[in-house]
Image (cartoon, rainbow over all chains, first blue to last red; front, top):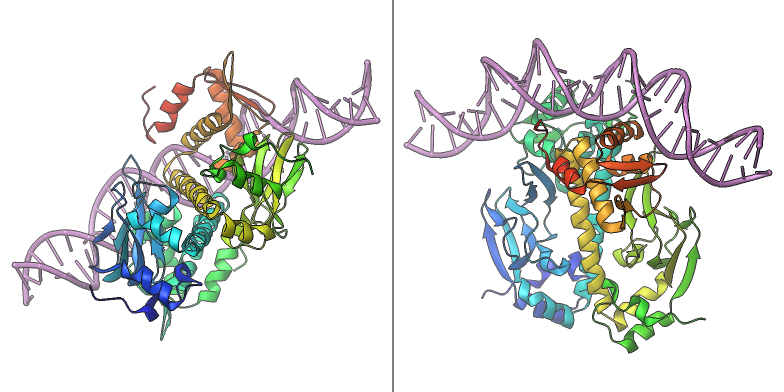
Length: 236
Length: 236
DNA sequence: CCGGCTGCTTGACCGATATCAAGCGCAATC
DNA sequence: GATTGCGCTTGATATCGGTCAAGCAGCCGG
């Protein structure tokens, strides 16, 4: 029953435009849950009993196809919502959410959503905005997959990860959670092998520094150049 | 000032849960606009002055990349909303909407959206649902592009088009608007040439019947088989 | 401290699909 | 009814990146 501190969430997009009292009312209904590294917040196909806000840590949303192939939908950063299936009219989660680091989420019962929205209509418009943003981002991904080579796509993916979850370190910007070549392959529609080869190449050129589930961008600007390079541009 | 007939729109998802009076209030503010074949409803990058509901015809939403490549985002069927940029927090249209047939749209000024939503909160939740659905569909597309061969992707695309805009004809199901090989290429992330070759092959096998900007599915079920065929399944 | 798992690397090969190139024919326009 | 353009077809060739295969190495658990 420990109440959640308002200051933790007051500035999140989901709660934009709410005053302290309203926030308090909404938070009344939330439970805070610890999710250990490598355990699921929810699983694809499961009944969408709750929706969440990530408070701390990092969560990977992924989908499996009927034939067993897996793709990474996105990485969730602290402050973002996840599992809003009910709000968009789904009874079941369309993807699996796995903590890639020890994480903390706020959870509301999906059943409470209609009531919350009725009392606090801004919840709907705020959620509409974030779902709209995700739609834009997903379209960007489709465009990239349609028009760019693997090298450009991976460069873009790394830059996005760094922007979203970059931590400054001495030698550059580190991606602040464990991520494998396989994960990157599943984000960019390619294979583990190709990612490995490309990253090895970049490491040789000093663009990045990498290890087991670890990537540090040493020369982000060089990566930007790579990412924007036209398919046949051999000017380096 | 000709008022729009309520019965035309009462059953659309955007207006789910509204009674006649409310609908009337909303429709007061709409203008009905004819859009001739091959003209734009709105253009990518343009200020998002209005949002729309397609009443009649078919509209193609497409995006151009900085480097000039074009991709088709989706085809809009009658009853669907388009140009809801403002609702998802965008000041400008993220894509171009072009009528592929003579079409009729209802248009509201984007500026009216906040006021409409305040008076009719269900507009927000209904829009949230449709944007959520589009997000799902776009994820499906990403999954397909990541895991399937061109042949499967094109088969899926045709089946989806037929489902969404199929018209029964003697020889099968026709896609009810002009669509070129180029369009299909831009929907599936491939090239005009590959689409042409594949369709030629299917036509030979009697699966489809096609002509200039025209495609008729003769054997939808065979296409389903093709679409679901595993990458190396040579069982035909 | 050791063993084994899991993530990573690297080579060789191959094949799906893009690219390059040429030409055809329907259909709209004047 | 002629003309021209646009959508389509089809061949030849090139290549990116996937697949197959083998081995390495950092890290966790015992």
